[in-house]
Length: 317
Image (cartoon, rainbow, N blue to C red; front, side):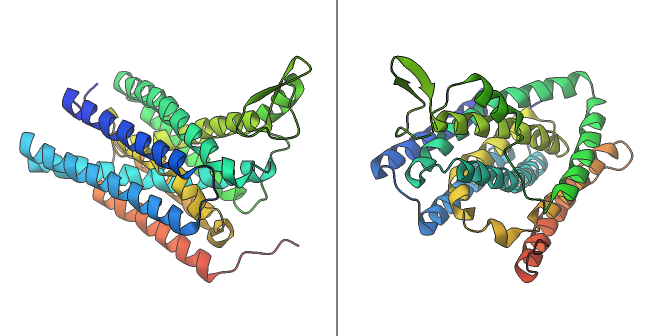
């Protein structure tokens, strides 16, 4: 499969991600379990965004010096567009995380640990899914049409599901765990398992981590095909995806008290998915430039967020 990635680029990317995760873990451990304030979450969110933009700038400069400026401009825009799409879709992911945390009454001081484990798991799972997707696209070009149709269907489904009150009671993974595992009612610090009278029991923390992992896989099935509409280069697909995922923990605490304020965002995300799906289906008839895609996605999200702040949520009857 064709990729701009070489050993230096892959190695540099891996080093940046590992160092960023280690710094995050060290600072989290140094601060100890605590309730994350809005100010702290905002600082971390801006830091993660700055890191992604710095990586994008570094990639552009490297490609300009080693290849040519046209390639640097194209791939730089592809990274930025992919990052924006993944970041936007991650917001819907976070709203489900909020639902899971609230449903199981996860203590505030333990939420950081749950999220950092979820992020590491998400990076691992998405890496596998992206390389598998890239291999399929390389072998079967027509699969991009399948991705496009799937995104159109997902956008349609998301549009009509927007505004409905989600529920975990019918979640298949939760039903399976309740049926087959011994689960305690109370948390035991950050432990995933405990023993009672010599019998092993799973804590609610274990259930929460499993549900977050399952949720991320479900959302990855939507978001990864979306970025293949922008580029099929696995290096750009993976790097933009991972940088969007790295900021999930900070974004979770940033949006924790703002979910209701952006009540129209799911409609905007539905339109974004539909637009990307249509772009994939039309790729051999009319190629939409990357810069146009970036502008359309940014405009849809901006309009949706402004309307969310201007229009009050519809009250249930």
